[in-house]
Image (cartoon, rainbow, N blue to C red; front, side, top):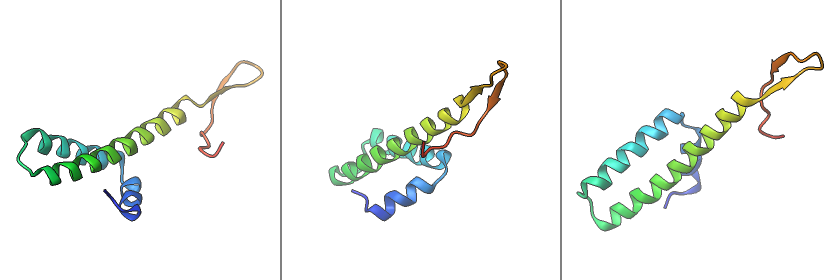
Length: 84
């Protein structure tokens, strides 16, 4: 399993980089060319990466959907504050 520092480092990576690594892990596991112990480590890393990717996608979706309607009916775009 990853240390807290490694997990934090993954969280700061771009979505595309995390997803690319996740795809690589899936490819390695599908090949079946690594030991059981290495497969378990890769699986654990993949689970963490999948969680990070989902979080990043959810945050992006919230930012896109954050539209407000003014009193006169006009739609305005507001940045979504993740701390709300």
